[in-house]
Length: 260
Image 1: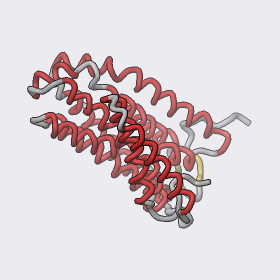
Image 2: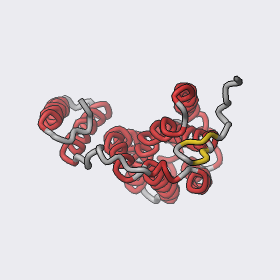
Image 3: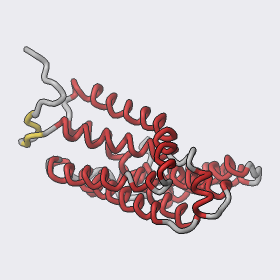
């Protein structure tokens, strides 16, 4: 019997499941999240001139995005488990697209950094829910191949980010952010229409959010990112203490964000 292709629609839990569409949308989101992690790198001098600020401050346009994405990704996964992967994924894409528009409209470095943090939060949702959506959409024999496609898209996006940013900066650095808006809008429309409802099924055993552990993880990651930015040795004990308290809180929690 001929092995079904990725584009074949199959019966899954009583639903006609367009696997190719789901893989395309989740792969696009992984690509965008990776691109935006470093798309502004080459454009920083243009942004500094446009916003009349120093490049050292604008370094947080990159750091703020990565910090939010890293610190929130575990809780974003919990949100998908508790409120439905499809619903949370589409909300994350909307946050990513809207915050991208506000990044482009920013009139100061502080506004841009703040909106980049929000954009990173949206990216954390896309990252945390993409693989579970693929896992729920494909049979076991094809999951590895589908996840591989998604992973390749992330890697390509990480490499392509500076190149795409450099090209767009030649037009206007604000296009670096504006370009995300129509892509996100199209992905939301397609995802809302084509992703089946059973992907919104809630995991009753997932447990609620763990805000204490999430805060401690954010402090730890933040201290590390600040140290990498300013090389202030006083940040090392802060990060170490945050990691220690995070481990302690996780060991005593009945609802850890890292399952043991």
